[in-house]
Length: 117
Image (cartoon, rainbow, N blue to C red; front, top):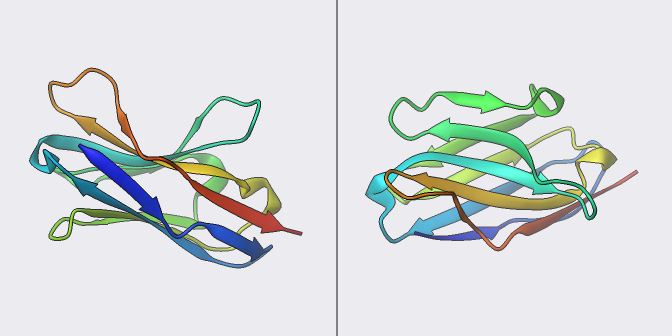
């Protein structure tokens, strides 16, 4: 599975961005898709995930009500709509895929999101 993110950038506090993640390869075996983020010197943290079967979602508390994870299964694309962005949302955002039968996660190359105050 290959994952390619796009859509990062610089935005003012209160603004919006949408991240996209295009998946290719053995996409039919993906059971979970998600977004993580990482600030230099910190551990990578989960932002949101979505199950491919049920489409159930989970969000970390700090983004609930502001971020929305969704997927376009026909085009094998994952999205993260980020509204009401805050400076503390500044991070490198990584797309993740959990493939059935494969140990560990697949990761994209990352997309930088910078929110200015």
